[in-house]
Image (cartoon, rainbow, N blue to C red; front, side):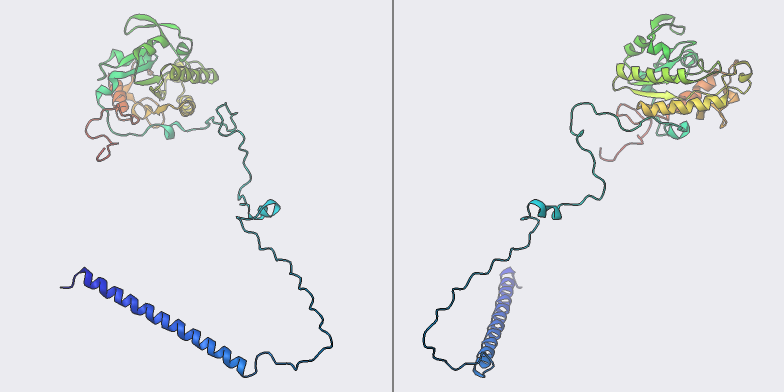
Length: 343
C-alpha cells in the first residue's frame, strides 16, 4: 500500500519534468530568435553599408541635448493640488451638513416627531402569551371610578395595587392633588401615592369624566401628555400601559352628550398618538369590553351604562393578561412566546 512519501515523491517528480519541459521550450524560443536575427543581418536586409567619404577635416559632432522627460500620468496615490480633484470620490447625493454631529451639546430638533391621525386599533399591543397573576403583584392600576371597580370586585388580581380616584382626570397627577380613595378609605396626594407603590408596571385609564361634557378635547389631551411626562420622570424604567377609554351604552349619550361612542373613538386615536410620542404601550381594552362599533357589550353593563359589572371586570382582567409587552420580569403560563431555545 502506497504511503504519503510515495505520493509526495511522485508529485515532485512530475513537477520537475514540467519545469524541465518549460525551460527547454524557452531555450528553443531564444535560439530561434537569435538565429533569425543573425540571418536577417547577414542577408543584407539590415542597415545598408554606405561607402566611406574622406573629409578634409573632421567636424566634431554636436553634443546631443537630452530630450525633456515626459511626465508620467498622475495616479490617485501621486496626484496633488488641482489634479487630485479628478480622483476625488463623487457624491451620489447632495452634501450633508455635518457640523452639528458628534457634539455633546443639544442639537436643535429638525424633524416633527408628533404623531397624527393614528388609528388606535393599529397601534395597540397584539395578543402575545398569557402572563400569570403574579405579573400584577408589582403593578399599579391608575384611573378614575371605572378603575376603582378593580379593587371592589373579585377580578382575580388580589395583589394588584389599585389607585382609582372617583371623578378624576390626569390633572390630579400633574398637580399632585390630594384626593380620596374610597376603596382604601384614605386621603392622599395622587402622584405621591403612585410613586410610593414603586410598581414595575403601570396601567393608566382616564377620560370618561373629562368627556362627560361636550366641547374641545384639547385640554384633556394636554393634561394627559403632561401626566405621562411626569410619570416617566418619577418612575424611570417602569413600563406604562395607556388603556383605551371603553365605550358606553348607546342610550348614555341622551343624558351625557359628551359620551358619544364616535367621539370616544376619536379621543382614543389621540391617546394612541400620545403613547407613541412618550414611548408608552397602548392597550385596546375595547376589544374585550365593546362591540366592533365601540358600544359597551350588554352582558357587561352596569346600571348606569358607563361602568361594568363583575363579569365585565373579569373580561378586562383576562384581556390584560394576554396583552403585555415582553419584559424579562414577566412570568408566563406555560411556555413564554419569547422563549429562545438554548437561552
